[in-house]
Length: 400
Image (cartoon, rainbow, N blue to C red; front, side, top):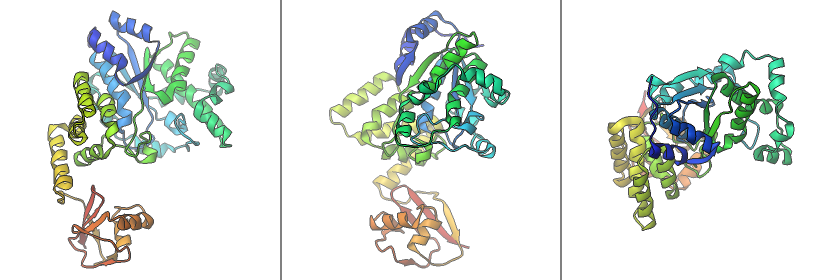
């Protein structure tokens, strides 16, 4: 059993770094300062196969609690994932099938282990308790909440005003997330600001079941590569499973105004160093240099020092020296020639012919480092040709 550490500086940082709101901050601070061992809960729904950096923000906070000796509890929402949380969605999230959930969560524990110390944490699937509930029990829990409370939420109100469907299924989700807190007797629950209603539901349900209401620590949300909130459904993510070279390159491609938020939320670089970086940016230092440090730090967290060096070397080779990286994927065809649009789609460098045409017209497509500007062209003698789209997508053609 780990010993609880009472360190005022670490506790202050725990309650402030990347934190948007704490409920009840005074109560939680007192418990931490008193050295009480807390049960700290985080739930993650496997709605996609990969954990992205946005989801690592509460995971890193969970690790901070773990480092102070508290009992962290990770819940994989194999049951809540079926129902789907629409807290941050502009439209109804479709129900997932059991097979989709099982496929998505195959490596979740392994991925979480890149952040948490897996030797010392409690782990559950929430189907352990949720699938056992009957209609009477669900009705009893639902009686604690009103429909007006649910539809008062900003995104739900917006959907209703726009005439969009809101299913009764969506109303049940906060009950299920809240009951997770009852089942594991949580002292603290972590989550993003978009989860506020669900997190508060846990407090209400715990009081109903004669438990002390959990404290809540909500983290800020970060933007993805396109400036919108990072989301798997939008494809604007940096996944912790991304190869080192891709991870490093993605960080380097993001907007300069995200550098400091990523340092704060997605790393554990000391706050003093983050403040120095922020000061340097304000004084006009080249953002690419500071972003390079950020990319190195993030890549190192998930791929170690060797992976970070590999990512940096690849970036320097491709982006600064305009060379083709080593070990690019190979794609095999029987045909010895293809028109450029077919080639880009079949190599999966573009999702559609319309996207492929746009890339060609933008001058973003190269064959053996020569820019292709005619989207009607046929590429012959394909064997061993290197195809490039943008700055990060490459493949080599092999003829069977």
